[in-house]
Length: 433
Image 1 (cartoon, rainbow, N blue to C red):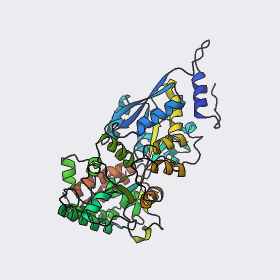
Image 2: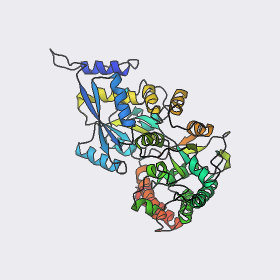
Image 3: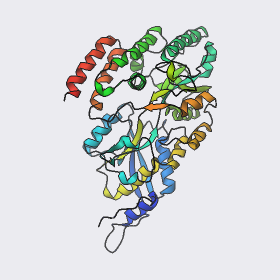
């Protein structure tokens, strides 16, 4: 007989009831029997969030062990798709962004976890994972893209640091000034570093440009953003796309080892930077956060609200999970999206799905986190728009745009020609299918 567990029952109680509900006729299952569930992660040595979640859950569910399975961060979705098809994927896996959520969900690769979300209250990113009123994943992280900057390198180059009023033109001009100033001071560092991710250009262009719409197939909004990137490459103010690819540069090393004075990146990097400072993989220097450069002056200044982007990061359950582990996996999802996990994540510098005053205070209470008002403003105040609107067309369009990204930044084709070709492909290969 199926029984519905009331929403008011906590995750731990629900887990106990479910585990106890279906043993043998004479010997009910022991609710305290050890259970091990597997969880996907990446860059485990430099990304502490997965172990933090596993350890935090263990304190409230001592009989459940969360075992980590490492994937390559650059090829995560490719590897996960292959493992899901082969039946070797972990019990719980991450959706790094919203790009492939529709593909996973419509392909039957996610378990309905609506009952695990009933006690979460109002989590802003939760509706992104709902289809026809059912939840197929829960958000545990909600990053936003900001500007990291090295205060020491700014001082060395004798350049005025960010003040929250920058547009992209200000950013480009400052990157060039930094490169010139640093060279004069005997440093090989560049003014900025733009990582090879398509997000570094396309995510901000989509979020900030008025009326930009990925699903329209009109990609003209990308043009000025690519022109600025090419300008910075040509000026030597940032490594070229080809150099970053060929030399396998990482944004962690470029900024953390003081090879660049600025870096536009997601707030998840705070946790990595703090961790690498402890291990020696990053230098110790004065740094800060500023809002991402803006489309125009209307959203600059601390009296305005800057616009940025950031998909939530969610966890879902592999539908091929052993039935005896489903309750434990759902209890884990309930934990990772909740306030206790949020405080634990903030305690390592990671931005959780629910950002409260307590979370902000915890993060800025960490050793090594900048204490200036602009850093706090950049972290806490912004309008976040999604990089990947949930649609059956999103993955196909983003795949085309990823190829376009490489073509443009490698100077294989001009901006206008590349975007025109991308629009034609989008119409013929995705939107008209």
